[in-house]
Length: 199
Image (cartoon, rainbow, N blue to C red):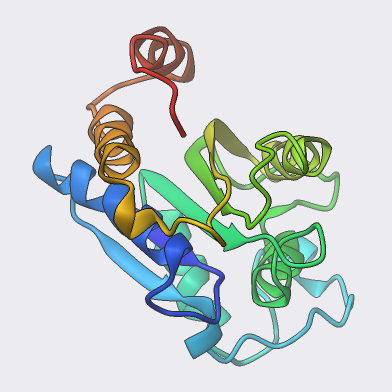
């Protein structure tokens, strides 16, 4: 399972939530790999569109490694705090460069790869950015990901996730569930409904 953390705070709320999911998956025997995007050299997409022809971006930077990690992973966990009502700039750079997963006819080179989105936000209103989260899930679905769940940790300015053990435990349980072998999206949703929603 691959974790991608788009927060410049490498030990912040988003990183803790992504790690909790990966730790839960590891309990099921999954191999976990995690990257902090702020620590990587990922340049802006220059819209040359060469990647749609070849499936390979011509820019020589750390994104080459991330492409391979995404291809190899059964599940990707992508996390970002909310900055200015959206994902961070580090996360947006990653998303823009994922154009390489699209073919010239805009079909995906990915085969419904499982994905969990993780957002932390200072606002205590869990639905404050709901339209944006839904838009982001739709974008990733278009790129070829089967978006299983969007974890939203609200009110983190007042209470960090380190002081919310039930939240971290439920997030770990989500990791166990997502890493269940041969679990389809529909199977996940049936099983996920049994979890108490406190995220």
